[in-house]
Image (cartoon, rainbow, N blue to C red; front, top):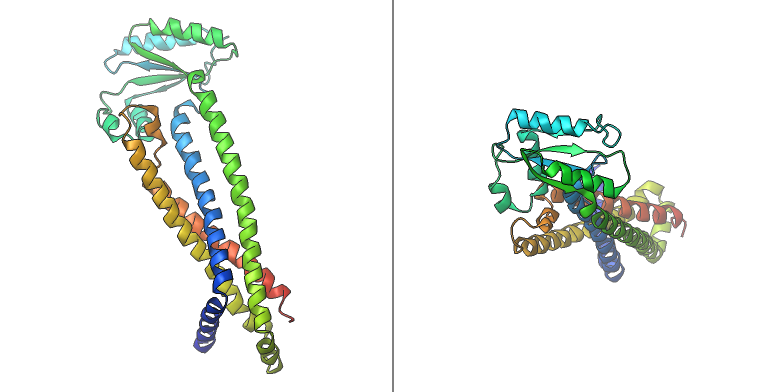
Length: 301
């Protein structure tokens, strides 16, 4: 058992050295494609941070002062529910101080200065409003009306920021995904060609191994390990590039004035770690698929 494992490792390393140029090309192509995949994940999460407060078709948020009395909060709630033909009262949602603070931690994940100024006691609570009307003029007139209510600190409208952010997010996501998928296909092709070349270079050795009774799987395993290792190396390189890219972005955003919306575009390190693990998994799968196809297709050389 151990002798077979040792043989597979030795043959994999030997094949790596014989096809160094093709291996480097396959690893780099895999790394670039996986880097684009990881960048897509980070961009999507960054834009989700900006839009987290507008989920569930919310188009208006009525912010209530932290020192508002219970009577004022009840008054605001009754005024909002007084227009059932314009506002979907079934989806009207009130976030108390704890819930509002949890949402703020997600929105200001990249702005510790602003977040440090907020506490569960001082943060404004909020009503999330889903209008039934598609008329933006009517919705805006309602917001002007709500601003005058006692206890209301501010009223925010989704139309002021949602359309541009959503359009930009969708465009970037589609472009990067298409590019990464194309490059992943190219990476599979390069790994396939690398394994094919390695098998062709050792065709006489393979013939001898078959004559002495070696099974097909015994012959395939070193070549499949080679492809798997190429994919994993591409994943490792892409993880390093993604970490450097995210660090540079976080440092650049940190230089902006605290409280600006762009600070929400920073992605938490925990999410970055999970994306890196996903990239390693995708790299291993890409390498395994390319090498398995070649090892099966070109075994009879």
